[in-house]
Image (cartoon, rainbow, N blue to C red):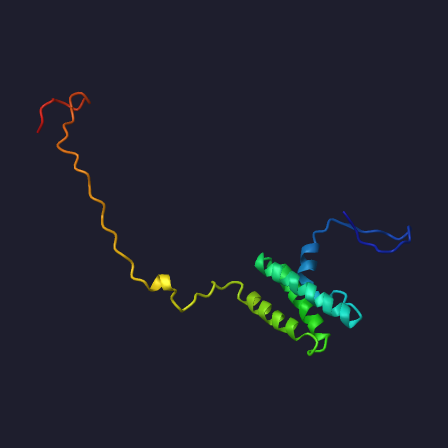
Length: 152
């Protein structure tokens, strides 16, 4: 049961619900993003938070935790927008690389068009292994219960 009334008055009527309406209520609410998380006030703190967020983003993408990566990506974007571009040029490049990797999360990995040296060498054909000659074998069909001992 869930207590619906938020008042501290003990005489107020309290309506108890079973929580059946939560699913529809949650569907109407939007997904939280990292941009809404608290941001440090000073520039050095913002730069440190941006670097930490980029580290978290890289780990999340490598581990294929896409929800965590989406959150970290939006937080990193908000931090990058709050800082002057000349201070964080390396971080912006890194963010762009990570954003590309996140965008290509469903695609197959790209293959190189150049052939390696091993692939350029012609493959040698294997010779089939010779079959051993076993000779003319006689199977005693009578001993196995299949009929007379005469060979046909």
